[in-house]
Structures are given as structure tokens and as C-alpha cells.
Image (cartoon, rainbow, N blue to C red; front, side, top):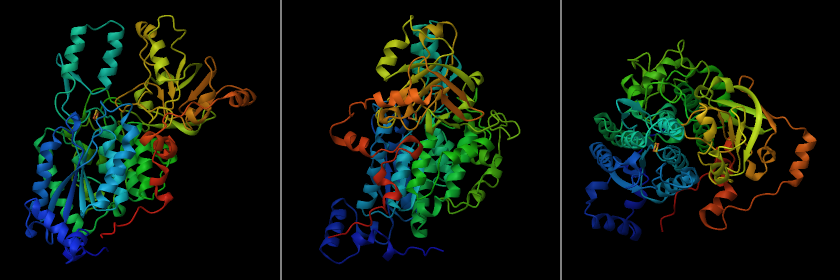
Amino acid sequence: MTARKTPETLRSARWFAPDDLRGFGHRSRMMQMGYAPKDWVGRPVIAILNTWSDINPCHAHFKQRVDDVKRGVLQAGGFPVELPGISLAEQYVKPTTMLYRNMLAMDVEELLRSHPVDGVVLMGGCDKTTPALLLGATSAGLPAIYLPAGPMLRGNWKGRILGSGSDAWKYWDERRAGTITDADWLNMEAGIARSHGTCMTMGTASTMTAIAEAIGMTLPGASSIPAPDANHVRMSAECGRRIVEMVWEDLTPGRIQTREAFLNGIAVAMAMGCSTNAIIHLIAQARRAGQEIGLDDFEAASRKVPVIANVRPSGDTYLMEDFFYAGGLPALMTRIRDHLHLDAMTVSGRTLGENIAGAEVYNDDVIRGVDNPIYAEGALAVLKGNLAPDGCVIKPSACDPRYLKHTGPALVFDDYPSMKAAIDDENLDVTADHILILRNAGPQGGPGMPEWGMLPIPRKLVKQGVRDMLRLSDARMSGTSYGACILHVSPESYIGGPLALVKTGDMISVNVAERTISLDVPDEELERRRAAWVRPEPRFERGYGWMFTRHIKQAHEGCDFDFLETSFGAPTGEPAIY
Ligand code: FES
């Protein structure tokens, strides 16, 4: 049983209580901002880590929501302070937000460590912001509660429902094939994103916020509330109220993020038909929490937990708005309760089992029963073989079943620009049986492992009606993507992984049921190629990129910086106040 905090034992009291010169400075500067001692004395100081920016459409409403969080903090007797964090807008940050996930995580950790705060509300949602905020808060070790931005409303075009990303890819292929007009394309552009909030397909954003809830880092139901819904305003205020009590309870991430909590996250990810990105982020987060979670845990869950969320792209009809109306994540968790550790603690101060007690499914087609799933096995499969000794990943629930067992010749592209230049060439020597390969797109090679893994279908095949084919890379792909894309090949080609040795025309065999992938080239020939392989030029000579390439870990290890993992040593302690 952890002792309740008292006003004297609050962390912030180290700054504000001492009758010395430093204490004088801290208090006088608070008064400079118009606060009086009754604003802070004896009250938990709550950081609100806001990842709003003028160029992040997924977080546009955070400019207002932060006031709702503050309202809750004040109601509960806390003192709110807004701390802006880096805003990683998935659509705009190049070459990829993944290059900066760890930067935001460091930003969060050091902001919390260096300021006089007792707890934090983390405001995020757009893809990498969820794992980044949670990674940083986990290492900082203060009581923390996560407020997801919430998905945007359904897209609409000519009365048809459009899903973020998924329908953009789909109709882009139609445009390349010449089957839709320029005017239709422009109207789609205006209709696919109709409100603020995160992508409303089961992309990385909805995957990661659902996992955050399953791990116990959000209040019950928080992850599925649409961003414009009044419920989201009320949830924001509730996070503010609850974090104050969490500070008194000293309910830190370390008391919530147990191995069982992460296993709950994995089970929910599978049932949701999750983004492949979930693997990388969850492994990194677990390692920050000092828990051993690896590809084998995903593989084990994949064999047991069916996909029951009928949400695109694994599902064929519904979006996150429908999922919310069907009961949201608590309802889904009741359906897979046999796969969950229900006694895991959550930020609500109650167990996961207590949180979902009484939750109901209101639409059995959106949230299916385990005996009527949309895919009988889990969303992801981990393949291993001589081409990926440390594993690679496919999302079988979102690809044409005929590619789940396939042998075909490789068509290799050494980088994204050369692939882009060739893919629309009508004379490209390619058939639907080929396996398209993109390399030098991994954590170091990309750099930052961009979401390039859903390689475009060659235009000549699109015109023939081909809409899926096997693609293989050390890149990631967007959670809104779909198709027979094998991703995260580890170790990556840029550092000399076997993918670097493949030549166009080599035969490659994939068997998802057996979880295997093999390059059908004799070992002696591979040795000859390895001896002739030349390591590519370094991507960066200076700055953050220089540090990134020296310290980033591989995909199967979560792509954290080696020096941030707990295995490197305990996080830096409390700052001295001189
Ligand atoms: Fe922000 Fe998709 S672009 S969640």
C-alpha cells in the first residue's frame, strides 16, 4: 500500500516551500504572473503537456480542450500549468514523424523532470504523439493520465463514407487507372477530413490510443470518443479532476504498467485489427517500464485473439465514430475478457475489470462476438527466416488471402526515389506474381523508418485490374494502409541485414500460416554477395540525425534510443535546486 501524499511531501513543495533565497525566487515569479500563494500552497501542481500546434489538424481542438482540463484541475484543488510539447503532425513532418518520436519522448521526460510539477495530463493522439508522450512520462515516473485527441468524424463524398488514408490509397489507384475524374478527386479532397481529430480508420492513432486505454493509462472509454463530441469536453475536465487525486494517491505509471498491463494492450491491439506500428511502440514502452515484451508476445496473442472490431481497413464498412456508438473500447474488452488480466490497475484507481463492468455492445456488427469475428486469428503475424532473422510483420487481416502463401521473383528498388521513378513506367518488367522490394528504408536507412511499406502497385498492373501484390521492405506502413505488405524486416538492409543481399529475379517464399519467409538463394552465393556489399554513406554528419543514427535500435527492439531504455540505467533522478 503506497502512502498518500501530503502537502509537505508534494514534489512541487521542493520549489515553493523552503524559506530560502531559491524559494523566494520561485514564489516571487509566480506572483509576477498574477498568482497568489493560495493558488499553489498545498495544491498539486499539474502539468498539462499539450501537443497542439497551428499545423496539426488532429490536435486543433486542444487549444480549447486545455481549458477544460484546467477547469477540472482547479475543481479538484490542483494548480494547472500548461507546458507545450513538440507537435508531431503526421501529414506534415518529413521525412517521417517516427524520426522524432524519441525527441518528443525526451522533451516530455525532461520537461517534467526539470519543472516544479507533481503530475501530468498528456494531450496527444496523432500517431507518434501517443507513444512519445507515454514513453517520456514513463521515464519521468510522475503520476500521468493520457487524454486522447479522439477520432475525427466520418468522411463523406457523394453520400459515400470515406475513411482516412484507406480511401485515399484506394481512390488514388482508381485515379491512376483513369476510372475517376479530376473533379471527383477534388471533391474527395474536401470531404475526407470533416472535423478536427485523428484519423478515424483503425490507423496508428486509434490503435495506439486504444492500447493506452487497455494498458490502463486513460480513463475508461476515453480512447474512442470522437473529437468534436461534447463527451470529449467532459472527458477532458474529468482527466483534470482525476490527475489531482492520482497525485495524492501517488499512482505512478510504474504501478500501472506491469507486464500484464502490456499483455492487455497486445490483446486489445489484436482484437482491434491494429496498425502494424503497434508492435514497435509497445515494445519501446514496455522496455521503458522495465518490462520484457517482444515479438513472441505478439505472435502468441495473434494465434489466440480474433479481430472483432469491424473497422476499416481490416473491416469493410465501419469507422471509429461507429465504434464509439457501438459501445467503444470498454464494450470491446468485455468481448475478449477471457484474454485480459482484469486485475490490472488503471489510472481510474480501479482495475481494468472494474472499469469495464457493465459495459455493453450496442451493435453486434461493429463489435463482433469472438464466435463471429471478421478475422479468426489476430491482426498481425510475425514471420521469420533467412531474409528476416529478427523477424518481420504482415497484417493478414488486411490483405488478399492468395498472397498468404506465395513464391515469386523479387523486383528490387534500392531507395524510394528510384522506386517512384520506375513504378509508373509502362515498360516495367513486372507481373502480379512479383514481390516488390524496397530497401534502405529502415530505422537508420530511411532514416526513421518512414511509412513507405505500402509500395504503389505498378501502373501497368493497376490498369490490368491488379489491386494487391506482395511487397517487402524494412519500412513501416501507415495503419490506414492495407494489402500484402511485409514490413519491419529486421535487421534492416542499411546496416547489412540479409535484405541488402537480394537481387532482382531471386525467388522469395512466404508462408503466413507457418510464419516463414525465405530467400531461395544458396548460402554460398549469399556469402559472396555479403563480401561484396558496401555500406551506404552515413545519412547525417551533424545534429539530431547524427545522434539518431548512432543510438536508434532496430524494429524488433522498439526503435528507442539505447541510452533511454531502462537496461541502460535508471532514469536521471530529481534535479538539485541550488
Ligand atoms: Fe494525425 Fe492520422 S494524420 S492521426
